[in-house]
Length: 89
Image (cartoon, rainbow, N blue to C red; front, side):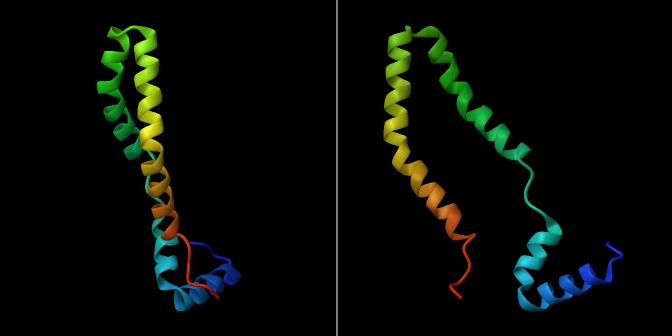
């Protein structure tokens, strides 16, 4: 805990004005390690065929997956950004 009275005053004001934000800031953000494990588990099944198939086939499959998956990725990004935006002032 900070000993600075100005910071304690700002913290009290924030808890009074926006308790959800104060709780989020006091807990902190989730660790990125959980996400890295997920990406490794998702990439592992794709790595085995990539090593067994010819380069052109692998490149074509990866390109097709990226093209078809990009709208879903954009929707996921938009949905995750909506939670960060607050109500208009």
